[in-house]
Image (tube, rainbow, N blue to C red; front, side):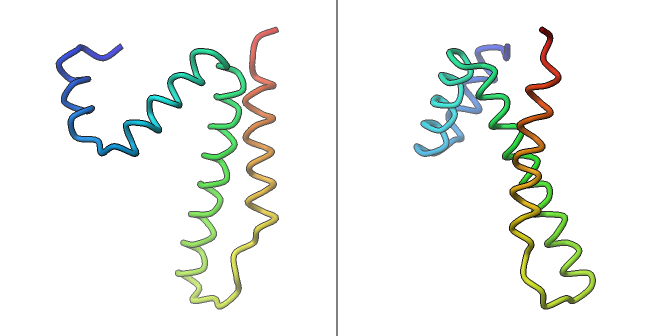
Length: 88
């Protein structure tokens, strides 16, 4: 855990929406840790895929649209891998 002074500094810099989102995330993490981590992993995997597609599109100056099926695959893959790595 972060020291109280640094936690206060970070909280004072956040706006109202980020504070509420962080509080909600921490609440879900406390009560539903596996589900919260799985969903977070899936979202971050999909976001990584989206950024990779955007960078590739910009470098190649390609006019194709982003591949939505790729985003969905990474979302599911991120969720499944994080759950499968849990100790049983």
